[in-house]
Image (cartoon, rainbow, N blue to C red):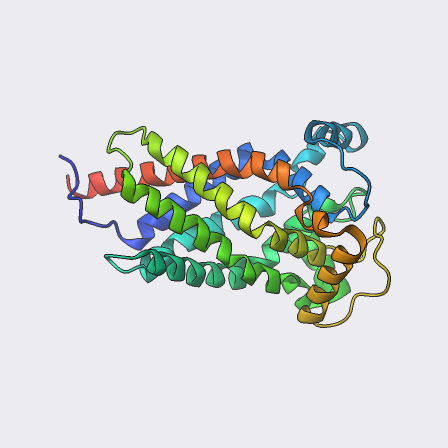
Length: 292
């Protein structure tokens, strides 16, 4: 017996679905994320290598395992972010939501998760960028950052991260609109969710990508040793962010805000497709089980 069309599973079901979805997509496509972050942090003005060449360089110089530097905090952050996001999204979204309702619910949900998970993503970025194994792992990174830079260092990049909540707003508005045109089928495959997830993520990733570059650069030990930026990083999140934006534009121009965009596109489209497919399958399975 199919579940009633107007019956919505409780928010905790959406949280579980989000956790499962995020873990699958993060693990399978993680090397592309590492290459993307390396590109984002590189402030050199010369032409960047291709994705395959960059990945090969990492393997040659640092070993195959280096492609998975920061995977532990990425999985933790993904589980918390996707699970919490879907939970809050379902809590904030009205029963008969308009496009504006979807956007507002997404921004509210994203802001909640930024405040909760920024330290995890900062550690993930630091582990991805290190080339000399400065940090031994996620716990060592947390303790070293707190000891050397203070507790507030864990919240570097929170300003551009809050701006990035618009990413989720764009993504979910597009996704929900596509679902209205043709809702995902009730069979186990739910292949429509693969397409809707990939298309909505590409739209959101392109629109908000400069925020990601600024966030990565502020979260690293900025300015780093591979930097054309001059001067010390000012105190205060707003001052750091504005200096990063100004330095990036001065040294690299508009193109600097889109470094790593190509590997990001290669990663986010299949990642989001897999995430939303898993999410829809888990929610449908839970809804079916609840009416039996």
